[in-house]
Length: 258
Image (cartoon, rainbow, N blue to C red):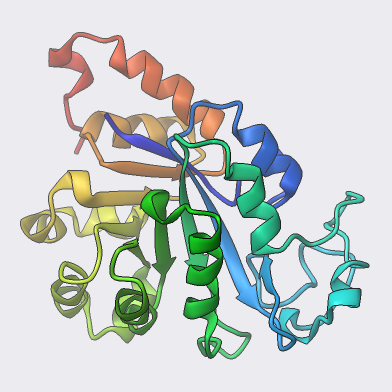
């Protein structure tokens, strides 16, 4: 059965990468929760998608410039919540033993990996005793390689879209490198649809994750295809559709769509 991943918590339902969203998503039967981590210059791991504060908070400027005091005065848009740290988020999930976490290790505004971020993220995961239910994720295979070096015991996932695959030297080169480094390959739905034949020659559908689907027809089509993982901003919809498809006779529910 396709595993459903709540993207940035579940950002179509609650503020993205918010403690409110992370607490509430636990009430859904998602299989995993995805969120993003940046590193500030003072050494804090903060959970936010963009390298800039502008879109999702009431401040502007690079995330890396935040001091601890500044972060405690930085609120998520439309809320009274301050920007959370990785420790804050892991504490929410610590007692939810069945939930897997997909922790995306982000790069700075110039696209450069933060020095030392992998070691810091791994140290936090280990402190909470959660290594066995985490995937370390990135769009950058050099970061994935660093994750394997630092923490070979923690599973890995690489995300990909057309631009990131081009940076890796094309689809064939990307897939060749990815299969030796990760357990899951997450590919944007348009690219995965277009290159389905070539991709599934190297990877089983169960190893693939499709992202990010919020449209009912698209979600249904990928569920019926039997994809291993599906990432959604609206995981409640994806879960409802999965439940309906699971109730169908096998001859209908497993029929792939072109």
